[in-house]
Image (cartoon, rainbow, N blue to C red; front, side, top):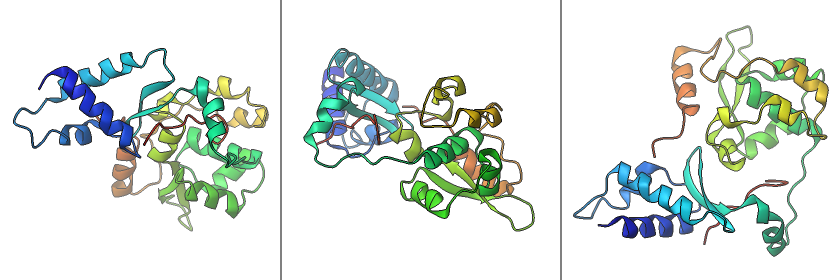
Length: 228
């Protein structure tokens, strides 16, 4: 099977898939073929496809869960006009809570409150969990064993990120007027997703897997996946 046909098959699969596809899932497309392309060839097809979209209204993007075809952010404003539903707007408190979890994870609700200086309502945590942006990844080994919260692959996918290290620097997000600039005084510690103090060994193993790089292979401003 030549490279051009492989590229077209991958393009068709990505166009109809509702979720990103990783290299393993893309390779599975060819498992019944006599000549199965290896992963380097699939990578080459993806790279060629990415270049094909350069300068167009859609792009091939790699996020935490794999690859997807999506609308370029430059054109999201016009594409959003196709939809009657207005994007949800989130409170400053919710955005601050999500930022703290993203940059200091894993941590407990009490630790979030210490950083923000105010209590965190149950509804904020519930909303973030319902959006599948955060999840419980363990328990702090202190009296009461409070839950440890961390972000998910869905969080990375939604915000167009491949891994946690792709998060914008604190200096960049200080410019967001909807977030309290004083908040970042407590967030200067470097992100280290493999450090899970106070978590049981089995829990730490599963958490480390969650934060690994993607396999080989927006509310306001969110890039729109381009699917069927």
